[in-house]
Image (cartoon, rainbow, N blue to C red; front, side):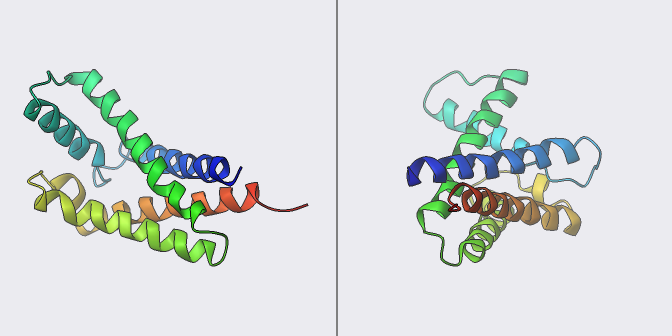
Length: 147
């Protein structure tokens, strides 16, 4: 049962992260565009495997789905770590993911401009992942509360 609760909480955190990304980017030109990095990574990966990569809206939807799934699995680990210092672990996981999202694309040969455009973009990128981790902790805590 703990596995299911951890997965549910992780996917709740992933949903929060994706809702933030998708909503704010429509209103703020400095908002992170992690979706663009994901599209580039997915397109390149599939092409390197000689698989015809989707384009346009299909590429966007495939990227959104893979992002939701991968972040959900990542955030689920917060619940597997147990309830002791849950929010501290969640904050550390969120900050780690956010800092990775800002610092790793360039090192992976991807265009990092969508998350490094300005300091505000960098801060928002890290903040979104932090919020995803904290939402995960809150949901897991609620699901495992006794009584």
